[in-house]
Image (cartoon, rainbow, N blue to C red; front, side, top):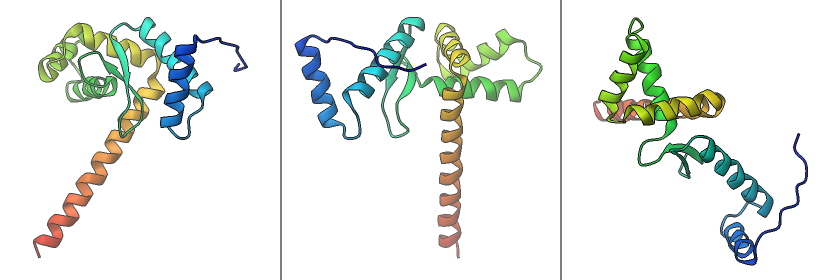
Length: 146
């Protein structure tokens, strides 16, 4: 259950928080602090996970690597393409095709296990964008081929 929590920040932290909010319309000191506390706790729970902002919003990323959703999507695709492969072979296939090490793949999957709705929503969003881009290219090709 969410409720008010009193937190005292050092003056320098408070000033940086106010500055951040001023540069990011639509945010509040409370929403930014809550986001960073949540992300900090998740990074502590899953070492190797960091968070990055981008066009699709804020998302979990492997430190020095791809987004978590990309690894999970690749594992799901490998499992679909090769349904009879044993777990270790699926993970080896993903490691080989992505260049991402097994330890990072394991971290991404552990994070997905804890936050599947968040990661699956990113996968669905990426798939929707891919379909939209494919349709747009097809329409352009159709127009130009007349």
